[in-house]
Image (cartoon, rainbow over all chains, first blue to last red; front, side):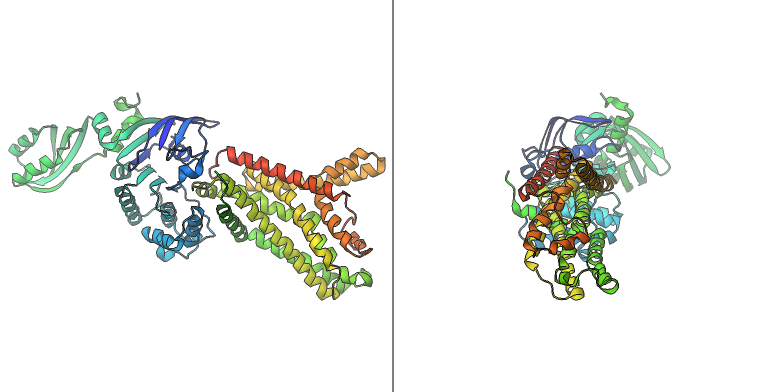
Length: 307
Length: 284
């Protein structure tokens, strides 16, 4: 997927110019507040809207003028899954299967319904399904035809925690088999846990784009690790302080808050040291969410990201 | 990129199913049934002598033609005005058009699906009419004219179907599409009356020409032009019970040309708009 100075002018605002490349096998998260340009980017990607300037290519073709070639092998789940409510999930998937020209329709439909855990509701009218089920059904229709790319606009909205786990696993499984995923979300922790790269939008412009790990390294100077352990004494703290990348340690009742350089993941070293010293390690984790922090700084204009 | 007929038929079947799933179409079938039965039974029960006995074997003509000037056009508008616009309103256009299908396949399928439903209702109307006429007035004759009336109704209904389809695509709001399309239809009907009246009173040929150019003119004329000629002479007087028994336009060729002109202009304008503009986001 390629965006080259792609721009969309609306009567009241302009989105872009957007420069973006999503490589095959990449899992990219689009983040940003409402109206920042995430959905416009997705709609440009799918040829639902025409760029006012610049160009967009999908599978090497313009999705607006060469729809069939560009959209072949691409599954899409819209932000608000507005599915025809008079259908049952099976009927809807049969329609989509015929639309994309699948030959073994019944088998594919059953398989897709099973993958999203809706097989037992396959003959219930869509109007009778819960919001989360409709969202899962929307993902199921995107999975039809064994696509090589998935475009998911806010796929976890309205989905309960178990359903969300199910969908997250499904996305990870799809990506692990070499599938390309572009997903937009407001839940930055979701994006960080699933995506390998991220593009952040603000007021119609791309704030930053790249691999999550590289962005954290580049823009987050310091992160905080929370350590919950028993048996930590002064000499152990001194040894932890001496580890490369550790900047400062604060003791807080039974836990430690260790400020570290963001580009060095010293969690394993700290854990090993504490265990070697005979401490009972109960928890060690980053206290902050890197992407959340990164995005907050970007949106608030801190850390020089806006430039 | 060529048009794949099989993909278009997927949308044709979808549109047919979608239209039936809406209660609006069920209501239309009920109204068709009422319109084709109640008048016959009312006539037989209350005014059996209103229609001369020699015309009894031909009363089916009234039922087949009576809905044409208004009711069938209104059905055409109700079906077509929502065909595209409701998909935008409900957000389903976005889903269907995110698949590897061409806009031409989607457009053609939707258009033909809606039109197939309209034709079904036209045939249903004739079927109900024949049954009612038979059960109320006995054996019906002159049925060789029926296919000609039906052909005229099927061809002429494409005018307001296409106009409403175009308005639905241009406006992309179902309720507004219904209002605008209905307004165009009723305006044409009313103007035809005025132009006809002014033309006959003043003798000014311009008004008669204008009357013939209005979209309702070929729509109302073609079924009469094709069907009446196949009826025994004198039977067409029966049609005076439900309106003018003579077509406004006298030439079948002109009627067909006008119908094609209105329909093709509407179809090409709506397709061009659909092809080159964005797929609207859900508007409701």
